[in-house]
Amino acid sequence: MSIKMKSTRIALLSTFTAIMAFCHPATAQHTSSQSLDLKNVKTLQAEIQINAGTLKITTQTIPKADSRFTYTKESWKPQIKYNGEPGKGLLSIKQPEEKNTNMKDKDRNDWDIKLPQGVVTTLNLRMGAGEGNVDLSRAKINRLVMEAGAGEFNVNLANTSVSDLQVNAGVGEVNLDLSGNRTTNLKATINGGIGSLNLVLPRKTGVRVKVNGLGGLDNEGLKKQGGYYVNEAYGKTSHSVDITINGGLGNVELALGD
Image 1 (cartoon, helix red, strand yellow):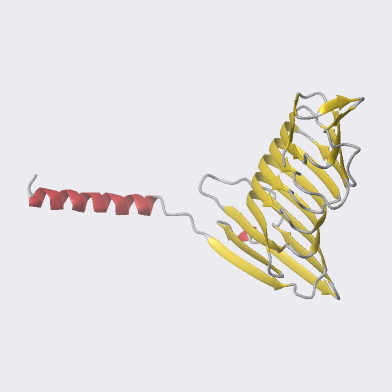
Image 2 (cartoon, one colour):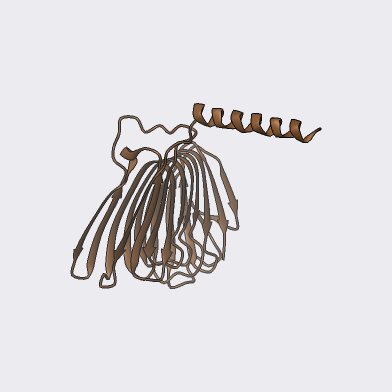
């Protein structure tokens, strides 16, 4: 192919690309961020609600609550409220309510939130449709109330001090890690929906699980004792994990971790 023909071909391709970009413009994106200094806060009560999109929550060692949001619709900009009292903080992050929050293929609504690892935290979490990755391992989580809608939700509570856990699962998959060392008793109620619930339990802390529902059950490492499933450490440790699972129509999988 001659140099002239190559140049002509490149020019045609460039023109075609420009025309396609004009006909199908890139979806506009908006970003916003927030950083809260919590160095004098001993306890934090946080409420996080996302209607549709991707949620990521992690912790950090510095006493701050940092968040960054990327979204295609200006109306999806989260509403952030914070009230501070002596030693106590109240944090609310919510997506505005809309009649129709359906997301198209090119839409984005990504939340990235970092909570302070060393602050005793009560967390109320509502996730609608989408994907949630919540890693609170080694954090001072006192209580977690979680409502999961449709999608895949991964929650890591390994090596935490959570003592009260309530989960309402919808349609999709919920993966919940409760493994690791415990310094407090844990009482949990998990209401499953239509989908799967995969639960990883501590091996060295006594565990007792009650499972109700019409769905399937896969059990690895626990034995049946009366109407409960227990591990080998049950009744032999100073702290215990007591879980009631109302399985709904989905499948429940129990397994032992570390």
